[in-house]
Length: 622
Image: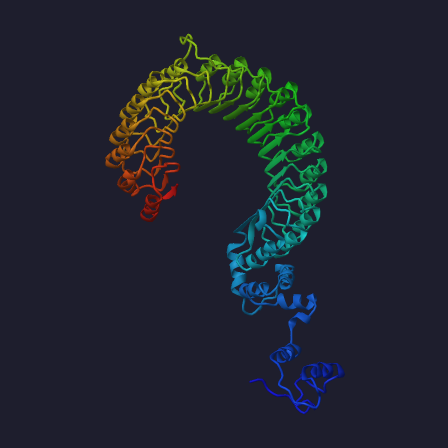
């Protein structure tokens, strides 16, 4: 029962002293008539309790700051951060170096930082990426070894406040990735540069508020920077690259893409200044000329991986100079895409000037023909992997001439100049080195060319023939018959004219070595193929028969066969597989780690639930 209060003030209900007139007025408003005793409502006592409750909230942020930096242990700091957004903000501004620890008895948190410094990773995307979330990350990770990697992607809610909190709370940060974060500008990078001096990798993409000023600050204060990526940052120019060249002696990897203000001056300064350490260079869609390519060719003695993509203002002269300078002494991998300057002449110069080149990708280079390809493969004595994509002047003649080289891997994709015609093969020699052959979406590639590969490449182990409507069982058989090493990985997806016969032959001849088989989209493949696979392919670990004409009976054969370690099975879009396959799938599921039964419309949801429950080690797509 609520207490009665003497209206004359004999039992004053306050924190000390007499009631002031303002308080008396409030009391009278509750009492009503002063000459009549009245029961007081509960709301009054709530009011009085609020009046007398001491609160830390009356302290200014400066005092809270001093209190919070003396909290012992990460658990206490995390608990305090959960009280209010104000406390979180104050805590997130406490630098790790400013936290006060007991000098006589170090906390567990300090030991954890020493043991696991900089290994925690956080990735925030979209709506989850906010300033408050970054503040929480800064407070929470400081006591758990420190944040080592941070990635923020696709957010307009992250500002200087959030990144400043990371800078203050995570001095151990080594990797920072900002993709499509328009509100982040130079001030944020400056804060990072002041506090996170251990930064090794910086990745910026579509950050239009960042300019030369921010990147220059990183370069000046983060000497350990070893990897830099700048993509689609329209306010970044030559000044940034010059600052990096001056201040980052450990830079090993640089990627510059779609930055219209970057030109020859910045690229040339960077390459010439860091010639002894720079190993990976990727330049894409930049307004650089032949001068930059000549500098690369002269100073790139440490470059091992070079990618030149969409350099529309560089001509044949620049690529020729890059190869002829013979400065690319360590280059092992070269990628050239959509560069009109790559011609037969420049390609041959690159081969002669890069003696250690092992991997070459040429894509959408419309001026490269059979002549240049043959000259290149003859001159590049160390070449092991060659990939040609959408080079439509390359024909069957040029492709077959590459068999004279020591290639280990040959990939041809969407080269429309290849026509399946009879050709003299007396000048061809057996290519004992070729282990992997990939022909994908070349509509002119047919049985004649395939048979030549089968005859002259007896050591193939990996074979991918994808989207080739021109090949049939008879064209593929020479490869199956002549491969001496035994095929290990075979991909025949979307080869519409292949039948069960070729799969039966494949299983019988190479069943003892075959581990991966992809028959997706081969509509003429039926249960007969699965029966042969179950009889001969006991090492098979990955089988894809999606969009094939297999049925429940085929799965029964698989489950009763010699397969001892099938791990991945895909039967998606197989319209004839039904609930009758339940016992077979469960038996196969004893070894499966992945099962794809998407769009198998005759499989009920109850069976799916049963499979999920019983095959608990298997990831099931349905």
